[in-house]
Image (cartoon, rainbow, N blue to C red; front, side, top):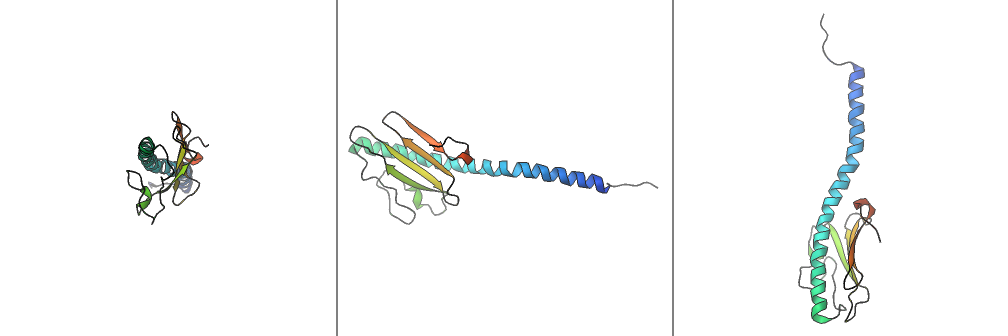
Length: 143
């Protein structure tokens, strides 16, 4: 008599191997998804940075710059307020860190709408230099 099929032990080994692979792959998959979503925040921050810099060059100050939250009004920058998007992934904030007529210092921060521990941030330290910071789950340096 010819027997075909798998033994219980063979099936259990395959199930265990699949379970181990899934346990390893799922966290990596979710991290990859979050990193790709952070690309949206970096692109929006880039557009906001350019607009803030143009505003500073035209007005020599940033005291009037604002990014109203969702449901708020428009920004006084020459770009659309990313907080006005209904299905946005990040909430954006702007902070003037002591800009004057000769030096611009500001921070633009994008915080994930569903997870406040995930963020992307641009810190403009002076006229020549600024740096992106990211939360540790996005693999970035934190301030």
